[in-house]
Image (cartoon, rainbow, N blue to C red; front, side, top):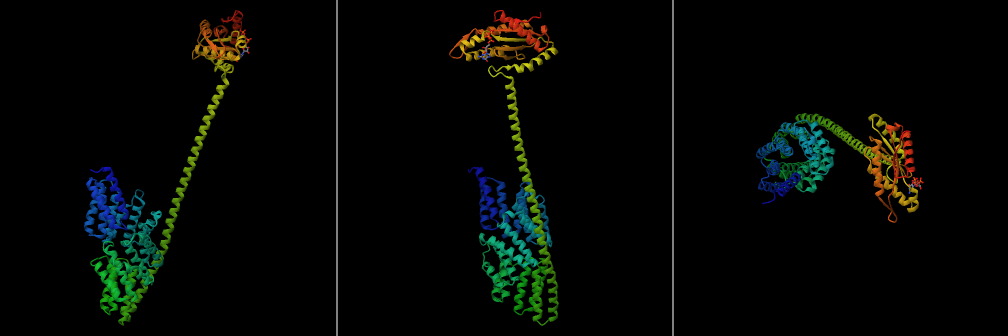
Length: 594
Ligand SMILES: Nc1nc2c(ncn2[C@@H]2O[C@H](COP(=O)(O)OP(=O)(O)OP(=O)(O)O)[C@@H](O)[C@H]2O)c(=O)[nH]1
């Protein structure tokens, strides 16, 4: 059995591909969707199957019986809703709105579509633009032309980064049709021409038929009949699989129209017959009106004025329903001509006046539309530049914020560096470089502090001065290097031999000082004697010479005898040290008050 993970990716990719092709190459899109459906059913992928069916149903709604499509799309919309698939639901509902629109229920379509865009931020640009485009057509069909136009331009602004795509062509085309109906032929020509150019590379699709038919209709209104025929006639014999019956019927009708206006009556009649067959039974008011008008032209030319006028009445009624002002003007004009040809000048005159009144109204509307178009474009451009400005400001603020936090980081690093440098310097200032012990400067700060603490805690503190014996001789005999090593060794013995709360420092030269807290003088003497023995036992060597039996003399002064004045204690300890030296060295003496 196939690996389900792999099938899932294939199905998803196929569905995505089919969606993107549905507009321009529906036959191929359906083939791909069908394959995806089979694959999805095989691996029991309900989600994939539903999306594939959605594509097939959408196609069916354009090319096949709509009742079946409605039933399937309704089912699919419910399925997507119950499974929380917002995009699936949206696409199914949009397809339903499209059918409602084609079935002449634009109000219903408007309500459905407006529900779909309540949260535009959740839609992809393509889905959003597509819904706005359908909504635009639905609004225009329901008579709200102004909002229809606004929606179309809004759709265009939503996909402004995807110019040249089929959907942008579709939107341009719809605005072109809008301008065509309003009587702004130059603007309509440009939009329809651009839309047709965009869609042409995709081959002979239904869209090419539709866009060409509207462009040809525009050219007819501009009086460029040959050009109109040149564009539309080659598309007339499309097979029904590539083009929807409505689009094909429209192409055939416009071709007939161009022929009639060129005076090519039998050629036009042929195309009108084709259009009748293709559109037979379609009750869309636009097609009903257009076909009736074409028949009226032909009948009038054949001298059957009564039948021609009857067709004109049908055409007027239908185009009033489809809000097609241009067709109404054409029909009134034809009616007037028929009456004039029959010698009924009174009727002809009345109709000419009606034409004139209507024409004035339509022209005013065309002007209003031009103005509205500019206004909408201006509003959208303003909104766009406000959005761009806000985005730029946001980006600049973010950049500044990042720069600031980078500077802060650098500053913090610098401060840390300075602080560690300062503490290294502080440490350096109170440390003796040779032995690593504190130096005399530290003693000057630390001794008064230790004595102050002792006053509060009622401890006895001993200050001991220690001086190496016969150090000069050692230096002279073994050299300064060994002398240094002897100092380092004594430093180690002292540091390792005192408690954590005590401290020792190099007082100067070969002299050291220890401060022992919470200790009577006799205990300090005992401790120092122990250290003396340790030192004596150490072998001091620099690799070349060696020496052992190094000794020191020491004098101890305690607070219980000399009080808490640092200098008095140091002086007393120094005196005791002197006495130890005098007494023969290698002795630890306790200073006594005389
Ligand atoms: N190698 C070395 N010698 C030092 C250092 N500081 C002081 N000295 C030497 O220590 C010696 C001290 O000599 P003296 O003051 O005469 O004392 P002593 O030779 O130890 O004799 P007594 O103290 O009387 O036992 C001098 O020769 C100094 O040069 C040092 O950092 N390294």
